[in-house]
Image 1 (spheres, one colour):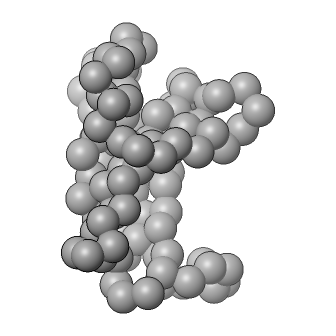
Image 2 (cartoon, helix red, strand yellow):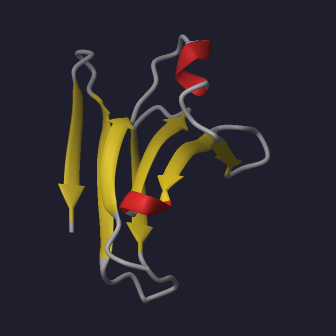
Length: 96
């Protein structure tokens, strides 16, 4: 697989859910049995492009990583770490 170019449409979803946001994605993975960590995505093979939304119920921060080949001993990942601060402002850090 070629290098995946990430187009982050939305990383955090506030406590209110918009049904139109869910309709933007054709695939969804629920990563835990309680629905607290969900990933919705579209993959466009013709452009080798992945668009995704990560929805997480948390009281702190969240991290999400993507790799072309896994497992690979936590190397060659693109990782996003973000959250909402106590004052309500959000932050997002991208790491390669």
